[in-house]
Length: 614
Image (tube, rainbow, N blue to C red; front, side):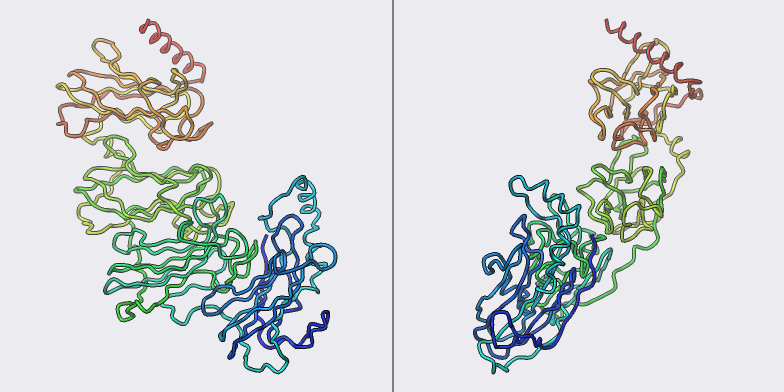
């Protein structure tokens, strides 16, 4: 549900409180309320004293929540000094109409008078007793909208002085913002991504004020801000559930207002919004300070302004690896080599819907093992739809060869979004940039054929599909410790997609992938992983891997494993071993002519191993 613009009203309301016979005219007044719009006017009191707030609102019949109400905000503190609620109103006539008539004492200063009337259900009501069916019936019939709009002409709020000769005031039009702001993003709308760099010459203390959308049940906010250290790419500060408080209005509105000290260094302040519930388009009751939806970095008495400098955030530069603008049902990869341990900067955008549907990972080319991957914990909201996630940080990798992977499912990808795109749609995929102290002369792009010839890899048979029977041989010149990394399918002591190694001279199986010697591989429980080393004597060996007719690379019938591109087997020399081996020239594979042939082959193998164990 989307709503329209905020209406800003300045000047003096001239309508008296006729219904109660109150003769004094209001010095600030909001009437002619327009539904789904925040109405606001400003009043500056040059002299304080006793005042009366009078108004008419409407409460939901299903909770204590108001569907139409007003409040008074202190412009300096940005905190409400009065809010229309059940305790300070009384019933007026039939239905949920409530009337306020309350005396308050105000100090000299600036105040902002607000009113908001929402049509339709706002998604945050609670049920009482057996009224759930009536409640949903009213939603579908549009009765809530009718209830609010049927009384739209009655809604109002006014601030009245204690006497009709009070003249010590002036009106103004509230604009939001802060006079002591060093950086501020305010009145932020839907699907925005804002950032500003700043440098600190020494440790500095700030006040951070900001509003965030944090729906119930969400693990991360939908609209929020954070600060990143430019050098380390680590978050120096962020909005979360623990440093925010209720901001008024809908329960998902949260407010941060705290002092933070940052060390000397360079930083970037970020603020991102999704595709709903932001300035002037709130889909639940707005916060008490709607004009400042966003985040602001404010100076305090502890702030040394001379140590603070604004700069444009540095660009990422040219990507070392770019697997971006990835569309539906794609699997892309790029191999690379590091001649020494180095830090790389990874930017990866993907789709999370209870599990990653579009995501990236990096594997060790010599062992096939995943060394980095996108997870829910190491990613954050990427703007747009809530399922858009991003990893943006530095990772240190040891000397060695690697393969960067990115995979997508059949929906929500570059130029084919089924929800709002992220704030950097063209970066959908995985990119690698130089990290700190990066030496480009020690970085090399490789093709995967080069990796197949790598001295560390004996056999690599991966990305295997349905009904496959694949074999390859290797020779060891002396006893050697090898590492086996295999991903397959099994369930309750029975394997369906799995591998084994045979001594070619004796015909004996020296290793077999079983349910008991594997562990969960992520995704569906039947995804199984073997990742361990063993010592083999010198000789010729044959590596085998078979798959049945379902659940394999790019044809999953359940949730795929964490490392889908490794479906199959990789055999390599364990780290630290010398090159005392050679590949056999007779590597070959067979794709079954039909499903039945492979199934019969697999059944025969299973029978053979079962008899052998007996």
